[in-house]
Image 1: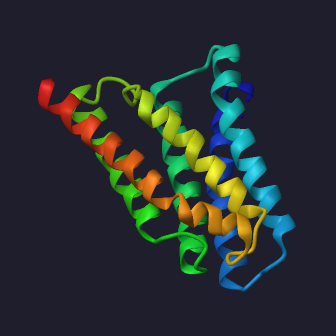
Image 2: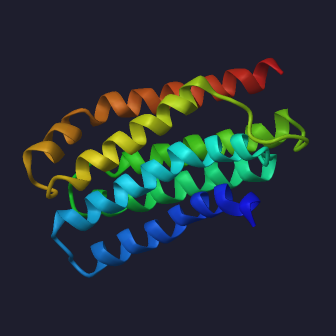
Length: 174
């Protein structure tokens, strides 16, 4: 049972994504719920791998679950925020393209024999994603924090385009 704790923490992000979507779809405007969801999601991402390694149960399947849970949560939250006008819609679209390319490259380059391949930009992308979600969780869509995130959208887009190019270059080189 202890061996499933890390996977349970990863899977928690699927439920948190569903809750975020449900709140947004019902027009919930109280920010406390979004803040709690964002912090719990980021916290679960921060500790799931550490716990898996500490318990000696780290696995390729767990790494895939972690990555898919991350992108599911991030895309659900950011798409809701994009629909609400907090950020540009191209941000979650670029994240989806980048993660899809990363997953396909991991399978093709690693020949599906291992978990997802490590990516320095991907790691930083995850941190940027959670920082954006947490910042937006604190701010209504048309408030100052959301405006600052919207103003930084071109820089975020450049980051994700660089990640896509990096993945393509690594695939080309292999």
